[in-house]
Length: 88
Image 1: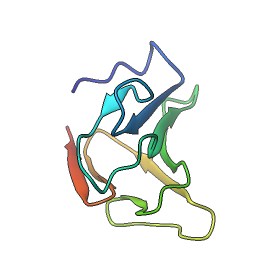
Image 2 (image 1 turned 120 degrees about the vertical axis):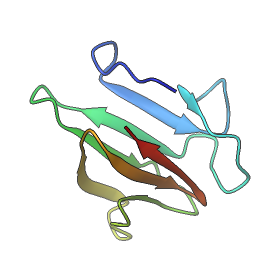
Image 3 (image 1 turned 135 degrees about the horizontal axis):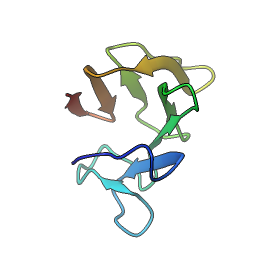
Image 4 (image 1 turned 30 degrees about the vertical axis):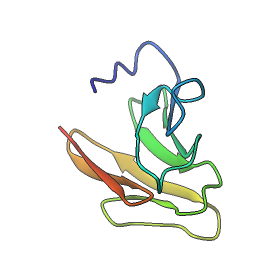
């Protein structure tokens, strides 16, 4: 799915189409699993929303804070639950 960061400050990723902007139909993904949030400086971050199965950016996970402070750039690998997507 294409993502236009100029339209919204954050996009929720999850299994439920009524609660998520980006639907990921996988059993390991929570209804509201993670959010892609961007700043005015054109940086984007992935924040896990307290999911049971976790999230990662290019394999980096912060299990304690449930927040991944890894910037998402033009390319990267985002994992939520057992589902992985490539950013291009």
